[in-house]
Length: 310
Ligand SMILES: [Zn+2]
Image 1: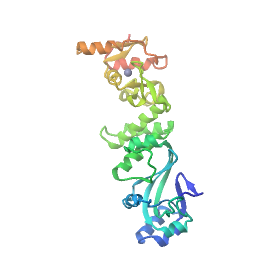
Image 2: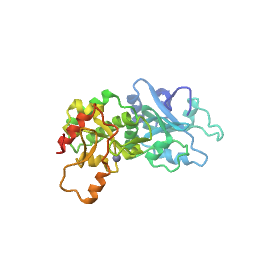
Image 3: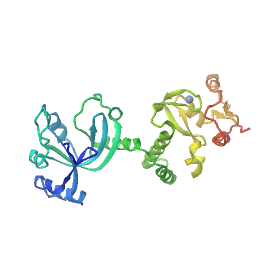
């Protein structure tokens, strides 16, 4: 259902135009209360020559996540409110027929909470687990997966400094096991990743200095987050990339620390096996990210993990 009133992939339409095609008063009430200003958002698909879209469309349920693409980009998403099959309605809306197949856009679904995106379709398909990234049928993500993909999309969007402050504030009051806590912590992580990696595919581990794909790196606080006050937690100088090949865990648990000259040293522990000692000795080097701005945090880390600070 392409059109000049295109809104991030959805089409803006008057609720009034849909009225006579609704199944029952419940649908009418739903539309009236959801779109109080009289304008709704909709999409239409053809049933496709092999009818494949029709089968998919019939399974659509309220709350599902509709995805809108243009070329190779996800340009928008919306939450399904209801669906209506009607070639007449499509015609009323002046939608015509699909070039080539001559099929009308009769599989209509009404959506709300339209969000704009600018995300590579390939990245999204990796997330969804589609194995045919070139297929360009209409896409609606269903059930529990809808919430999961919606959350992933949120994480892809820019998180502002103000939002971060809000997240950190909320996290303080939440229990360790709270599900919201997990979501907020992921958002906080997403914020720092934006800052550290700026959209690039490769990043450098602050401890071993090796370069890795960013999905093998985490944004780690130098001074343990739980020991930080609000300012420290929000300070970009306190956050560095560390790799999942051990540096993140080894540093966090104090098996290694960074001394006052910016050199990685073996932590003070009595439980070093020779294997572990060998592993840690390989990390003994000066870290390139060390500076006046973060040396204090490294000293705090050393102290908090029982390692010497001078
Ligand atoms: Zn590393």
